[in-house]
Length: 238
Image (cartoon, rainbow, N blue to C red; front, top):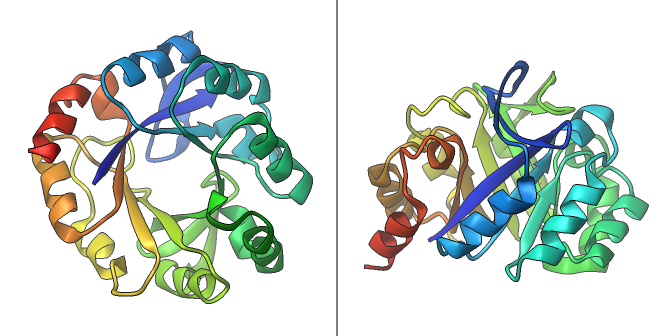
């Protein structure tokens, strides 16, 4: 299982939100590029970047910082936040981002997702962010009546091979992942699942690995040093 450090960008800063609430923001570093380099030094094999301003605005905002990060490191970067049109998706892939995460677009424009999967293949992954099992969109500010499991089934049907599943109620809380919901998504022949939300201990990573997820995105726990990245990577390898 791949451990993927998260870098959330807001106002050009590296931040973390509590349960996706923009009014509960903690700034962890004023230099996101230095943060990215730190995770690489500690053994990260991929970075997860979210343009929070972009997610709220509906279009990419922190593009210059993302470009600086991509140019400063030699591992793949996956990027989400405000990617809702073909031009923006193509632009960030041309910039050197290896995977683009579509969330709101998967709900509002599934035909766009299908076209992007046909054009870019596995470079397109879907972010499914859920509260109490129902998908939230627009930077987690808008609720829907669409169940996460139904959205994943729809995306699998059009060829999506990889899903990032985030339990919003756990995100940034340092409690524990929603094992039951995550486990239910790991199905033979189904999309690979990357888990996110609530990871705060090495034991959480071991349990997620046991459930069969492909990766785990870790944010606040790394910044508060509840999890040491290098140690966690070594433990999973062992």
